[in-house]
Image (cartoon, rainbow over all chains, first blue to last red):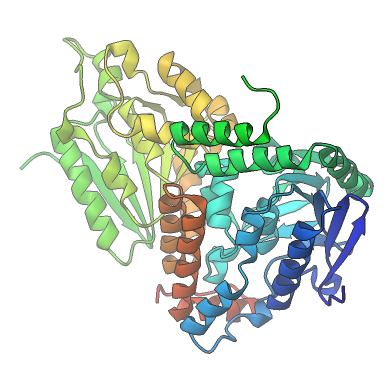
Length: 243
Length: 257
């Protein structure tokens, strides 16, 4: 696949999607959004691919945020809104049936952090730093962060990240302590660890993995009773042993 | 005219709201509740105010009606009358509100602190919702806000055992954001408030709306709310100023426009 802002490759059962604009610390722009959308649609449809690993190219970081040079180029709010919904990458990630593992190093800022929060498991290198600077730029998070981050780390800590964002960044250790990432590994080992974890997840039966993801993600949006019904329905559909 | 029991101090863009009955450990009575409600609506509509700090006078944040009862003679108040509830009014302030928990925040005191957006606790402050031990239950939002801050399991444990936590435990479980050295909670809160006051006011208001309303919605609906609010911000002068300041590598000067 001929991409300009990302790289995408298949390693038997895992697909590696790599943000590839290292000269600007993988700043996220519209082109990258469209290419990620295309790559993830491919990974979704390819029957060999069971797990996706998302990572960033270059020494400096996973993604330093949105490419601000693109901001303010939309002729009107109506156009900006149309552009936002023409390819809804965040919804594609939210509904993604296969596990996505994020391998995070260096700068994981703004949109970079929000992108990571649409992944299922997050590994961080010891040098990773996390921050949400939007408010100091007169912006609000616009890649789902106002919704996903409170759900991941709790309301109080999420609000703190947003309000203290520009002045304070979280280290990998701090991110681990509050549940923003699930594991911290040495930088040299990050991509190997991510691949190893992805292989472990790839061993499970895909239909079961998909059902578990759906039960958890969709269940969290429901009253408990409805979530319990969803769980029973998904389990029943898998067949096999019944309780 | 009731004696003022709530102090409002304005300094620059930061308003400080102080529960001011230190000799009684700042419990809320009906007068105080109505003064607090008025103060909240006043601060909400005052455009010169960008951040609010809520604190208690003396060395107590607010020891709660039930808790305070133990320090006085006579029967402690058993239930909190409707006219005493104020947390909803604090939560309705559309600007960031920082709780400077300068001392114990018990029962309704903790409920008020949880209605704020950020909490800085003094290292000796104790916090708990102990109403169950007094034969009653929280009714100023405690049963709803505690699980949203610390998770369901920890909230149930704290409520059912009427457990009082110290500041370092509160930090670990996400009940407070920061712990301050003895006597410094108010000062640190003001430092934080000053930093927040430098952020874009409209974006800050929208963020608060997106986060709080979004948590009550299914994720996909929350994402739509966020997208719409962020695009609505395109119409603000502050957004243009923020992006310009970034390019010019200088601090932004936001005007709330």
